[in-house]
Length: 146
Image 1 (cartoon, rainbow, N blue to C red):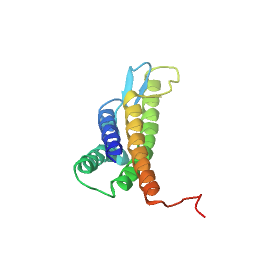
Image 2 (image 1 turned 60 degrees about the vertical axis):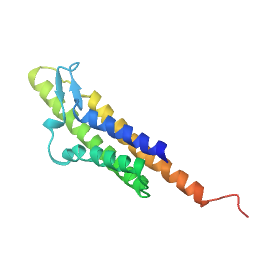
Image 3 (image 1 turned 90 degrees about the horizontal axis):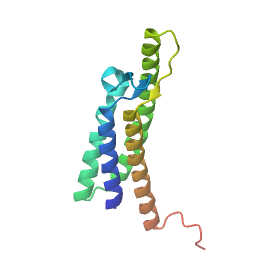
Image 4 (image 1 turned 90 degrees about the vertical axis):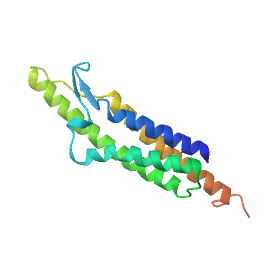
């Protein structure tokens, strides 16, 4: 369905915008940690939105039957990696803010972290909805048949 491809496209754009914003903040935004401060597994967040963007664009113009599975997998992997990255960013910003002051400061999720999570959630849900429509159209799992 075109609607699910457009939803995945919008989710990809949200996740791409979120990459360039702070993942975690502390002290009312005075201290922040963004994707540039993280290493390791968090770098996969640079690739996943663009892969989903490419798959959604191809799905809009050509028939791409496995797009729904790709969107579900990218959404699930993106949410998992984004959650872990946000957790690490919150710990880093808490340590950074606490080292400059005498009080314990707790990091909060930043606007970029919210955008990334919302984007990957939209990508995964659009894939699940497209899969549900495909199953309903084929007539599988019909509970009322005798």
